[in-house]
Image 1 (cartoon, rainbow, N blue to C red):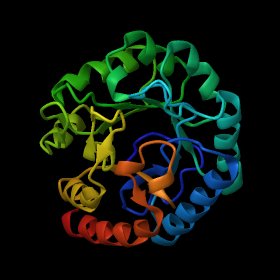
Image 2 (cartoon, rainbow, N blue to C red):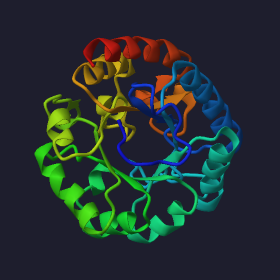
Image 3 (cartoon, one colour):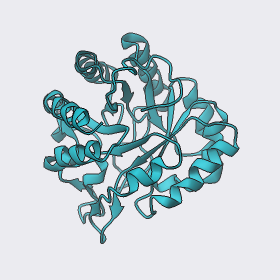
Image 4 (cartoon, one colour):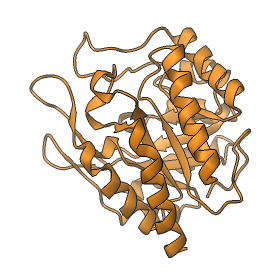
Length: 271
């Protein structure tokens, strides 16, 4: 579980894993609020601590003409509205040091993308905002090497750190999850999350659009809870086929509740 305070994070005494979930990117106010409302209703019913996820900008795209966002301030204000409307914390990615303070004015958790997890200036800038910092483990790194990211943030004066696994590069166009990494990263004294959707990406496709295996989301999530993950990260959308970003590996929103019910049962069996 999370061992430091996050404003508006409900159900922390339930004994359940926590959930970071939402669309890959903020596409607009109406759909963000619709997704948030559905997930909040599910997590409240199941007593799951919930953080709404949405990227205000997508800086890492395969092609130059891929969707990157609706405008930074517009998207960040939508994240703020989600938080105020439903009383839940929010998380979004930042990509450069000068984005940290800007995003921190609107959200509760700053997320460091996997490809940027070694960027010292970015980690330090995020740390200095005082916000929770969620660092995604690079696909190219071992779990053990993530202790240095944790150290950088703590040495900058912030002990509110989360680490998220999102698989390891396996050849040029696939990823594989090594579940030994979850307890290893937990040994650093921080909560550890399993990203159940990005770990199923198939990057570097010749089409320039990342593929995925969403039919295995349940498999990844079940295994993560079985080995003791503190939280799960799941991108979800009511129409993944038409999502503006990462639709190939997102969970259909209608499938989320049934999956979470199964995962709670696993959690109860292993704790």
